[in-house]
Length: 327
Ligand SMILES: *Cc1c(COP(=O)(O)O)cnc(C)c1O
Image (cartoon, rainbow, N blue to C red; front, side, top):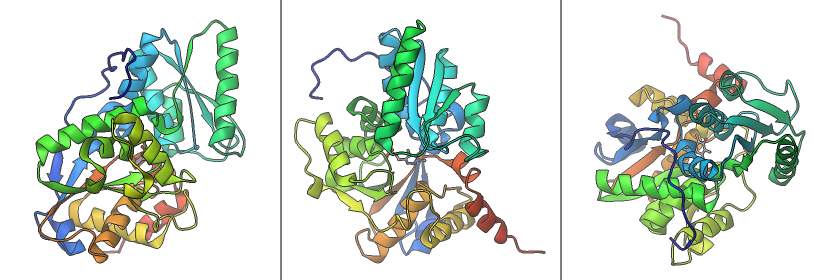
């Protein structure tokens, strides 16, 4: 850690470690040996439907509490898992939550957005715009809250600041205890903090990120975050990142992802999501085809959560229902 600043303790939001489970039937279907593929079950994190954002929120909410915050403010897409888990963390910690979401009322329903409502979060619709527009609106919301006498804490997009990414340095430590011989951890790459923390903990050679189209420059984003977490800079070209699973863009469903969802479900009873973990498995399958991941070594797929997002994706649900065969 390069930071010499005071680091507040983490907020306790879950029970650790998460399980590491074998996936022998999925491994065989991908062309690996039965013992070559394991799943790190961060989807089983207990808070709010689970997922990778909880590890980051433990650090970010710890800092917010230390600053005397009374309300958490964060940003995201309408089906943001991060927004949903920030809402759950706020409920758990007794903090109010304001979510600044891209789009307008009625642009999405169900899935994560329904859970945001259940957790009692307030939503501010920011219209169309990129992460920069969302951040500007969040800053204005924070200003208004301050004028009303509240103490807002701004939680970064996807929880991906150097502080939030420490949650995945913690995960890397868990993985090394559970599977010291692991050769590759495959993770979806969204806002970048998850991959960055794993790279800081495991080194760039043992982490394969599958870009999901959430940020314009994934390698530079992960490089900056990982470099902030260690004493050794991590240049973008040292990172293993697959760019081939984005398809027509972040929210869209691709055929390789639909195949990956079906394969995981039918070999292991494992549910992935169309935006993140489906892309991670599709990227893993492509890496086996490319012999970047090979039999006889131990690969780990990070299941980073996202199940509510499946129920907020009408196209993926329709395709899933088409898989029903009549008996
Ligand atoms: C946010 C998210 C990711 C990506 O993590 P980042 O740290 O944003 O790169 C992966 N999977 C799921 C389910 C997510 O919600």
